Image 1: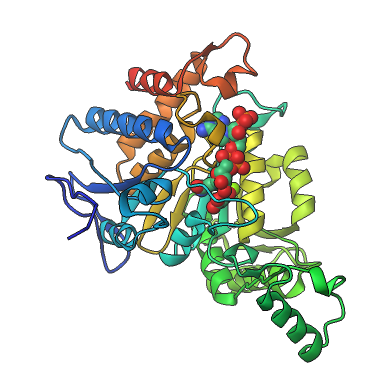
Image 2 (image 1 turned 180 degrees about the vertical axis):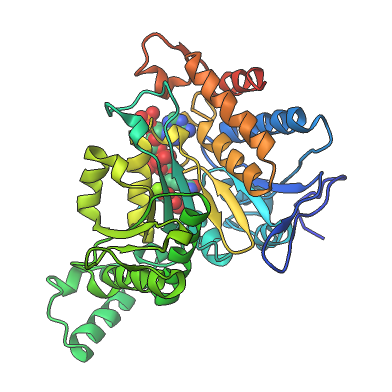
Length: 416
Ligand SMILES: NC(=O)C1=CN([C@@H]2O[C@H](COP(=O)(O)OP(=O)(O)OC[C@H]3O[C@@H](n4cnc5c(N)ncnc54)[C@H](OP(=O)(O)O)[C@@H]3O)[C@@H](O)[C@H]2O)C=CC1
Ligand SMILES: O=C(O)CCC(=O)C(=O)O
Ligand SMILES: [Mg+2]
């Protein structure tokens, strides 16, 4: 029994089988977090679009029973002050296996730590999967945006992103700095009296489970290459180790062998002959603009993956249309790449595309590909009909600018 979560009268749980495949009933209960800021705009649109797609694809034989669960500002209103991530929210995400969420606010420079990160850590959702593809007609700063077609596997549980840090001049920061100087012989902290300190854990287990998923995805989806993106020349034992562990895993578990003497590798032909390569993160960020066609599946660390996600999203039209998923071996929480865009909150203005396409990924994950296909086709048609929200409209002078909810209606009208 939950305290504030209302279990729908109808619907059953999705179950995880011993081999991690899913048993999805025709009427699954799907938990959702509305989200802060523009969550109130995009989440209802996403639900309506998904319900229409499911109803049209399966003629009423299948139906989602939505179950609201709480996090962020709304959970403060419901559970009381300073309850940002109730225990029963985590419990429901675990129990019901597949969920979807709107964005959640994280204050800058102080205050609470990210609830988004906490959700990923506490449920061990170690893969942040963010596909980046171009929809014909979307305005882009590139001449050939269709050449950008990548799938990002961002490590989601480690790195400097884990939030292990101490504020400058705090007792804890002093303790760590003294330990580093006195016990570890560190001489490189330029201003020890006034430095904040952050810690960057990167493990072989964390790297290997992420790179394994990326390579397996590349094999299963007939992709051409997997690129390990790192800054291993500077951060040798974290980002450099990520690269080394990634290549070693490709060799050990997938039978990769050196390509032209290395360091690049190639999988055997029976595993698609996929090339495993690496690139230093700064060079990668210029090459994705100049030669995006050279990159395909990307495996990278948490912070790099955060930066790379928004940069690649911009190449194909921006974060208004950038979907994502947080995955463990069993649990999945789908969410957009963007945040709460507070200045647009409650104005029915923003693009719901990212969350709708995150839901499209969710339907595919559930094996409901027909409903997912309807959403993709509707998105293609709506954009080709030049019906767009403000973000695209400002670069498409001849387009019809519509609200967030009207864009959702336009999608539903085009589900044929
Ligand atoms: N997973 C999550 O829940 C995430 C949460 N956040 C949090 O969100 C908050 C705000 O972060 P911020 O850095 O402003 O980043 P946001 O992604 O929220 O917004 C940045 C800009 O991106 C554009 N944008 C974002 N979403 C949409 C959309 N749906 N449609 C059209 N345009 C969109 C807007 O651009 P323009 O102004 O040009 O119109 C917006 O001002 C922070 O607290 C941050 O921590 C951030 C990222 C992810
Ligand atoms: O948790 C946050 O507030 C930001 C997260 C983020 O930017 C992301 O995961 O892409
Ligand atoms: Mg981000």
